[in-house]
Image (cartoon, rainbow, N blue to C red; front, side, top):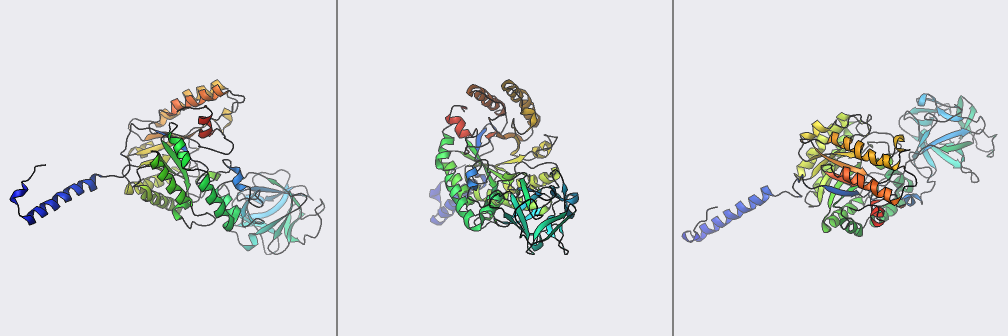
Length: 516
């Protein structure tokens, strides 16, 4: 820039010129400054998931559920009712939309009734085709309504001597009873004993359960849930954990969260306010210890998969069935990016975790990913936008062409030598070879020179091998680190800690099973 001799100008002119220079300098700062980091293809994420903290997964800390009354009757628990008089199971005929019968010798899907919990003893029962059990005008038990009302509400009364023997009380004041195998009614006074001659007595068996955020908050209820959850958020992950992460070769954290965080401090029931404050703390600690943060929307409205970590109420996938759930998800992404865009620790935003095909279609996720990408870019030009591959899809490359046109996009894949029969009988060497050859091939398929970056967003050093030595585990961890280290964005280990030290990163590091 050419300098001007100020001595030739009047006092007023000097002031005007000085103001002009200030404008030029500030304009350069304003229009060239971008919060966060520049997109850097040479930097690779070495992260750990902070699972079980701001989004509940019961297996990570089972004791969280200990104080819930009737904790075996949580939302989504499948109950099967066997009549003591006819010796057969209640069944929603044709899976629903019909009468309830008691003529099945064995119990499967039509014989399983999923709980919607109202309080510790009162419930709705949802059947296979998603109708609710209720009482018709003649007092017969049916499953025909898609929404639960008074006639679809029941109380479970347990035998104090044998809690698996129950009666089911309707809101008409009477108990359900099996009159014949084809006729179940709500007209028993419940005055008999608990013996095998009473048609109102059933033996219950559990078939599947969920222990996620919905279950714990609805289980404790509006008085206890805030106390339990806020104490958990305050104590489970603390500043010292961020210091530990930063001092042991990791450079980032992936933080799973639920959609209701955007409504904090008064999220919709049964959720509890306070997780947003904990996320704020995470960003403060990350900045203090030089860590990057990946915000991971793990639970979307309506649930994008049937598992507890999407805060699913009963295993039903409702996300994407209407544009409302997609738009609500985009609004959550917009809220989070706007809140943290100015924080230099914000490194990436993951738009949704593990949507499950075929219930979640490719068109659904593409709509979310385009609109969610735009929401992130509205607030940040530097945050990476992570897009999870659909689980269950036969085409791992289905997002590559779409994502290639979006600067700073990342495809997230999850690799576990678990959760499938093919791994059950693998030896140590077979697992090592599978990582070296099969995982390499799978990662290569989604890694293209002009495509989006690749991210192994979840992996673990756990396997199905029995009696493996410490050296075996070290080899297995190192094999995965070598292969997943080739992902162009980086990787994230599945969890920092859990109550049983279930191959958590913290336990692996402290016990010498892994070195970064």
